[in-house]
Length: 214
Image (cartoon, rainbow, N blue to C red; front, side):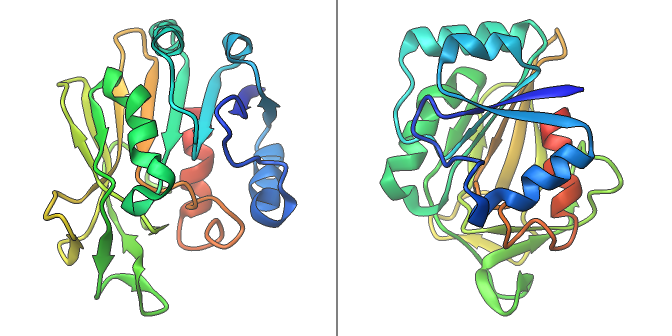
C-alpha cells in the first residue's frame, strides 16, 4: 500500500475537510493509497509520498535540506500553489521548490477558448507530458505558471496555445524534478485540481491518483 503524508506542518489545506476533499479521500482509499495528515516534518520519512497543498508558512533551510534528502532517497514530494500570489503562496512555495530548480511566478493564467463552463480561469488542457495515457485532459482552476531552472526538471502539463499569462510567461503549469535515485519533486500552479469540484472533471481523478503514486 502506498503511504502518503498530507502535510499540516506548514498550515496547509487539510484533506480531512469533508466539503473539499472527501472525493479524493474516497478515490485514494479505493486505489489502495493510505493518506495520513502529518504535522511533524521529521515523520515524513515514514511515507512514500509527501504533499504540501497550499502551504502558508515558509520553509526553513533545515527543512529544505531534510526534504531534499528524502527525494534523494527515492521519495516523491509534491507542492501545489495558487494564482496571483494570494497569501504570498508563490513566495512560500519558492522557499522549497527553488532548491529543485522550479520557480512559482505568482501570476494569473486565462484561456478564453479552452476552459470549463465559459470561465477563463478554469483552464482546460490536453498538453501533457510524462504522464500515463489515462491522463488525456485536465481542468486546472486558478493556476499560476512555473519556470524551470535545472536540467533535471521536466514538464508535466502545459497550457494550450490559447492560454495566456498576464505577465507574459510561458504556460508551464505542472513540472517535476527527477533525482537519479528515482525520487521526484512535483510542483503545480494550482492546489484545487483535486478538490470535490474539480476531481470528477475530465481526467483530473486519474491525474490526482498518479501524483500520489509517482
